[in-house]
Structure formats: C-alpha cells, structure tokens
Amino acid sequence: MSPLPFLYMRPFHGQVIDAEAQEPITGAAVLALYYKSTPGVGGSVSLAVDAQETLTDSKGEFHIPSGMRWFSFYRGFTEERIIIFKPGYGAFPSHRESKEVRETKGTRSIVYYLPKLKTSEERKQNVRMRTFHEIPFEKQRFYVEAINAELESLGLPVKPVNDKEH
Image (cartoon, rainbow, N blue to C red):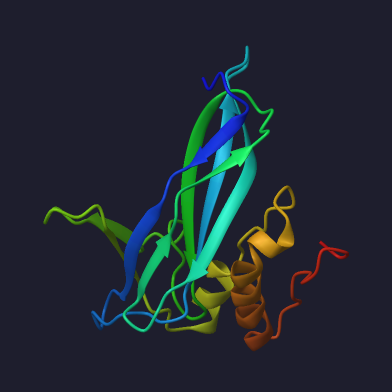
C-alpha cells in the first residue's frame, strides 16, 4: 500500500503486429489504465484513477512514459492494464486470439499480436468495448475515436466524443 498521496504510473513499450501477415499495425490506439485496488471484507475493489494513451507509429511501435499523479487519495495497491484497439482487428486483451509475447533479448519490450477479423459479425462482437467514465475523455480520446470508427463502419451507434456527453 502506498503511504504517499501519489500514484506511480509505470511505462509501457511495445510493438503491435498483425498476427497473420506478421506486419506492423499503424495507428492502433494503445490505452494504459492505472487502478487502485483496496482490500475489503468481500474482496478487493478496483477503481480506474488515471490513464495515458498513444497511437502506434509506422513500425507498429508505441511508448507510454512513466509518470506520477499527485494527490491520489485512493489508498491501496496499484495495478496497470493495457488495452489495444484497431478497427478490423481483435482487441487486446479481450479477443481470444490476441496475445502478448515478452521479448527476452535484453529489452523490456512486449510484442502484441492482433488477429485480422474477417467478417462483420466478428467485428461487431469485438467492438463491444467499454469506455471508462471515471477517466476524463481527453485521456482516452484515441481509444474512443478508434471504437467509433469501427462502430460507424458497421452502421452501429457511436459512443459520446466530448466531455459534455461523456
């Protein structure tokens, strides 16, 4: 448990690859969520308290820097989670065929493999992603915009895209 009123946000480095073609995926939204978990009588309670995001570059690579969020009054254990979404691909970690492979060649980088979805039914199942109402919209803009691009291409209603609607 952190005795200080801050949340350390660990960095994420990696590359996102098309699982079948073995090619980099450009423009995938990478969302790092930071949680505080507090133990309780009925089990632990987790609350998303911050987020950072980026898009993959032309090599499919991304970097989310470390950081600190001061005045975090959520005491408990820090947890991190990463979500990767690109229209037309299975999302990480929710799609059963998406996977991560840790590099062991002296780097702390992780390669994420996303499967290309072949049917609109697969895409509809995959896009049932949640947005995080406890996190300000500007910290998940790329993620929400990627989900909305997929929803729109499938003829489905889009999610809110500004703080007033969010």
